[in-house]
Image 1 (cartoon, helix red, strand yellow):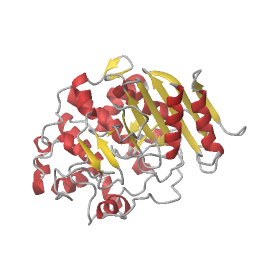
Image 2 (cartoon, rainbow, N blue to C red; image 1 turned 135 degrees about the horizontal axis):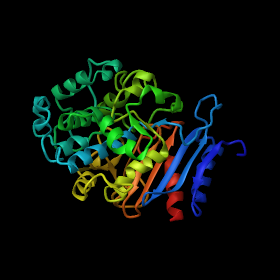
Image 3 (cartoon, rainbow, N blue to C red; image 1 turned 60 degrees about the vertical axis):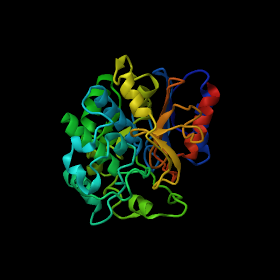
Image 4 (tube, rainbow, N blue to C red; image 1 turned 30 degrees about the horizontal axis):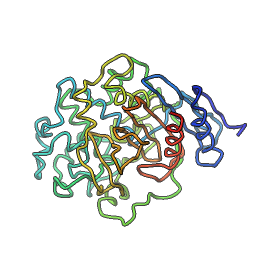
Length: 377
C-alpha cells in the first residue's frame, strides 16, 4: 500500500478506523473515497485516499467533491427541519395547504411528514416520461401533483428514490420562497465554510471525482412493479447523470456533491441537539419531530424492513443500519456512500466513495468502517 495516496488527520485512538479504510483499497474494494468522523463537532478523523479519476492519475484529496446520491435526502431533511423550527411549516400540516394542486387523485390529506417518509404513493412516474423531463422542475412537480398514488395511502412506505426531492423541494419552495439548495448554501454551509452543494455551480465542477458504476445490479429479490418503476425503467432517473446539467440542477433527493467532512459536519446537527458549530440551527422540538418514527416495516421499493423519519433512515431494535445506537439517524446513497448521526455518542459520520457498489441500504464497506469506529469508542 506504499503507493496509495492518503492524506488527512487521524486522532490518537482512531488508527484502526484508518487501517480498515486503507484495507478496502488493498482488497480492491475502493478506488477513491473520503471518510470523516466528528465527536461533539470536533474532528477525530478526516481522511481521503485513492484516486479521483478512473485513469488513476489524480489523487483523491480533502477538497475532492464526490456525488453522494440519496445521502442528499438526509442533508435536505435538515433544511426542512430548520424551516419547521422557524415556523414556516409543520410536519403535520397537509401538503395541499402549501401546494393545492397536490390534492388531485385523493392525496388531499397527505401530510408533510408522510410525504417525507415515503408514504405518498409517488415512488416513481409510471410512464409517458423521459430521462430529460426531470430537468424541468415545474413539469415534474405538476406531474407528481396530478398523479394517482401507486398504492392505497396509509398502507406503509415505498421508497421514493428521485421523486422525494421534487416533493420536498416544492414544499420548501412554497413555504419559504427559496429552494432547498439555496437555503443549504446560504444559511448552513457558507457561514461555516462547509463544502456540500445541492445544485453545483459551474466553477466547482473541476473538483468532482469520477464515479465508477457498480459491476452488478442491486439484489431486489423477487422484483415487483414498484421496484421496476423506481429503478429499472429508462426514465427512472434523470438523464445525463454525472454531466454538467445534472450537477447544476437541484435534485434534493439525488445529486448532492460534497466531501465526507462536510457530510459529517452537516449531519452533526442531529447528533448535537440541533447545533452546527456554535449556532442553533434547529430547535429541540423540530429536531425530535424530524427524527421520530413515522412509518416502519417492509418497504415496497427497497428490499428491506426499515424505519423512516422525515427524510431519514432510523436505527431501531432489529433494524440497526448505522452502528448500535438506537437513536441514530442517517441515510445511504446509491453506490455506498452514507452519513449518520448518533446523538447518544454526539457522533457524526460521513463516508463518500467514488467506486460504487450495488448495495442499496447497507454497503459492506461502510459496515466495516462503522464497526471499526465503534470498537474504538
